[in-house]
Image 1 (tube, rainbow, N blue to C red):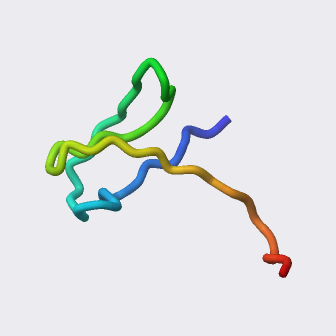
Image 2: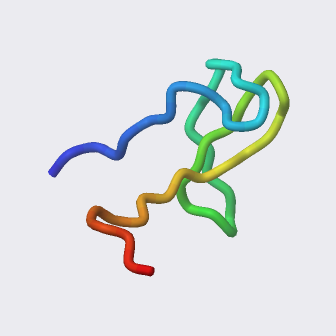
Length: 51
């Protein structure tokens, strides 16, 4: 089993100062030390988009 992929930068400020984040509501996420925001990255799938 592989580990989950880590983001390279914050989607809000673009900084690379990230650390894993876990709260009572959200089990997995990332915390940006530069802008103090927490976020989650979610994989939606592989394939062709249907109209």
